[in-house]
Image 1 (cartoon, one colour):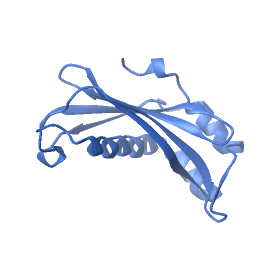
Image 2: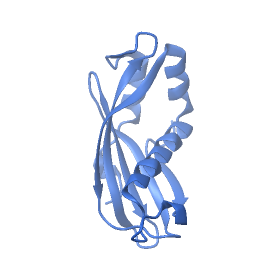
Image 3: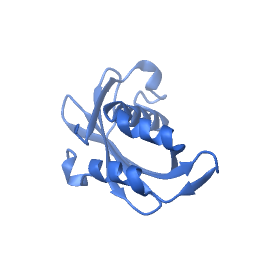
Image 4: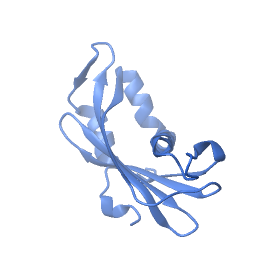
Amino acid sequence: MSDPLSRHTLRVRGYHLDGYGHVNNARYLEFMEEGRWGFFDDHPALIKQLKQSGYAFVVVNLNIDYCKAALERDDLLVLTGIIHVGERSAVCHHQVIRQRDSALVARADLTFVLLDIHANKAVPIEGQVREALDALTLAKSDFLP
């Protein structure tokens, strides 16, 4: 099995910046979404299983902490992993690390549900989907500080 902690790197570009010269807060949502897509790239069997089952993951809540400013040309590491799987929802944790000094730039917990695409409603996380998510679950302490 592949590593449950996904690592995705990106460089801050000028178009990511706000009028103050640092990354705009909304851009971190995009960086974290890139991290989630990287997570699914790292675990293609999970997405294949979801599609075959007629399910999708849908975001229902996001809590984000902004810790340090990122500037143009900073290289960032986006860490992404599943930290909790409940009966009807699960939590994906992100950390954005500035690589030049290992500073924690932002962190977030994103809650998602399992959506039955045909019924258009959330369903319990069970069966093979639950098994797959449980196998990928790690602790927040498995992330960098």
